[in-house]
Length: 368
Image (cartoon, rainbow, N blue to C red):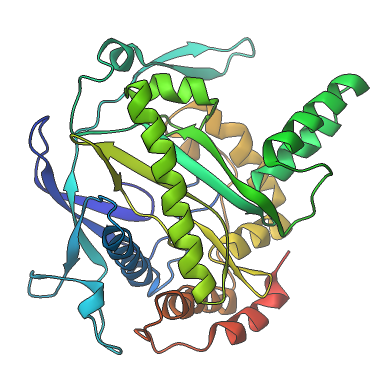
């Protein structure tokens, strides 16, 4: 299915009948949209599956529909995270209901520099707006509560400041700050006065940023249902932030995906250390430490990823730069970051792992 988790289809989805499938959360990780990296992080998959299950059960307890069915035990039976006792292994497999996926038509062409580029045709969604059912909405809905190190907002700010025309530069920078509810340029780690929502594509080779109106057009939803989608996304953000606060963590940002089956439901997963960014005592939890390590030690590969990802599927094979392996100590600490973080966020000691603060202290030597 993807670079870090696999989908096993048990029953296919139809327009009027959800399908059934299992998410298998692997120990793979991905940065810079590369896909599977050279190292695996043992225990990462199980920690993400358990966090995802915990969050789905939290959302459902607050009346929010999801596609979650339960965790899959070794005997094939379903169980819930809330039934898991401390020290029990849990599972890295989650069962979910499935929706249909209607993909936009991809059309390739040559750019002026001779490189292949892809454009997408969403006319199907416009022609069938408000009439299709049980389908994956082709958007990633992103919410920002703060601006951690590595946030794409900082790259946009720098791009605005580099514009040749000073007036255009000030105008672009002002628009970014206004959209964030800020009056001055922020520092990394700052929390925003209110959550800010944005959108990217889900069913294209790369994640393309969208304005609100384009996101509505691409969604296939009616105007009324799209407003419900926005309200629901903010509610999910609120609940994850609330849980993070109980665990002594800050919730910087995250994303959700949704399907439409006679109403909106949260799908894929949310509130994990891969989908969302959290911090403890100002230090980020999750793969951001690995992103920063690659930026520091292999900047040529990072730059090549940005250059090649717009050229269409399979760009990783065409890219001549390849990522190197992590130092063994960093790989071990990254594993502990996921398992210790899962224990902290869920409030249940499933993993035999050090306290989160101890892991973060040892990771300091590897941070960018």
